[in-house]
Image: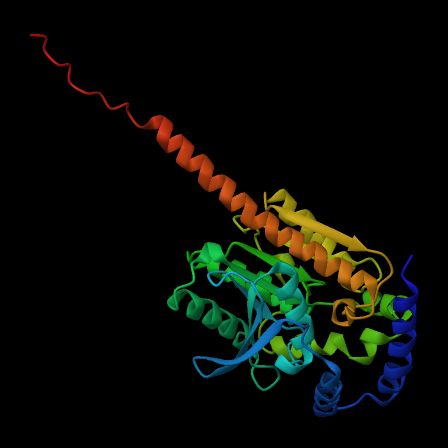
Length: 328
């Protein structure tokens, strides 16, 4: 059962978004509201903020104290491909970076409808390539994202694989949007289970804004439609009350069948974007702790594999022999 803190959060979100659902605000007003709300987003203690630019794209580093310099978390924020920014997700990225003990690079990729598909994906690939060009090794890079950013993270992996480029070590997807073609039945589920929270944000209309002339079921728009072989380890977190739940389960089943090392964690009764409220929702802190455990497991598995390769190489090496001395 969800915590009392989450139940209070749900009531507050319902009260705040109910009027939006009735008034159907313009996208510009929703963006402004999201940015205004971000003034309450504070970076965790001992996480240090640093402005950055990735080939002219606004970005920032969030560096937890003690994080190893050679590893990095590339973060892609959520917002339906039309909302969100470095400001709206700064606290979440900082908390995730701290939990994973990774320096996080967050990027402000271009948004629809001004910049439709594949602009966001191109920006994500640009950031990943930039990291490699600046000395980070693929096996030391992890990708993460929430909601649309989680779907974008999966699309990035699929795009890199199909291009024959080296893949990152793993990906962390928080409530990822894996299918942009949301049927009406799912929208009815929003009204029933989330008190119109997602409907107020008009999520069904956001997919077409991003896709525009591209079919919504294109595999780089809806990763659930893609072939999923050859992907690195994935952590996916989802709530059973989210409208995205069924699509995530379908994606997970498909990934399992393709042999992807996938960890699926399903939480009970939580609203979409519950991770953003980690300061006072215990389930969010638990989710971030589990993401940290997943990250440490990835690096531990890498170290074990490296030791195994070294041991096998040592066993295969022929024993050195020294010439016998002649007796006098």
